[in-house]
Length: 88
Length: 196
Image (cartoon, rainbow over all chains, first blue to last red):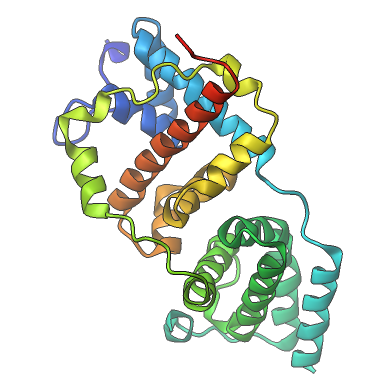
């Protein structure tokens, strides 16, 4: 059945470790099929389930807390003025 | 310099201005944040972003309209940081990537470094902790986290921005995530969590 084959298996037939599957998910490199497979895998792999939740929480916190606000307005104006004078 | 080596496009003055305004400027906030996270100084970040945009305009004919402007700009900023800023500041300790590769390829990869870091303790962190933990990482590790988790770049784009092979991007990210978790774990412990 299609659902029983592991979409993480590479062309060379190497079976991925839990960590390798998790990393593909975290790094945003997993395909939709791989995401579905990993979700099913977590139902019976408690270490992956726990690690996934911690890692995803960190990823979300980074995005929420470290995107640092907007660039100062004066910098935008300075850059535009310098471009204008260099183009003239 | 790679910008000078790229195949040249030919743009009218109006086209140059259009590319600059509509393809480059929309990324200025991400660029500023990247500059800040690299230099850890708001004034240095402003200088770095300004230098990057002026360079981008000067070499605009090395940029092919409609391609990945964000990755192109990030690459210029990263190179400016290495060439101009990193030299000025104290030379950071070089990461032993050989060791990283060995670690990554060893049988220990499934070992959980932070088995007792919990979602609840992470959610109680108000913001400074996560930011401080990120800032405390070696700049090379910090960079891959910024590119992947804050900016959503793919391996292939990161490899081009950083001039390193995709395999190195992957192993560096893996190591960076573990180091970040170790930092967060010590914050969590200092907050009174995970004492068991």
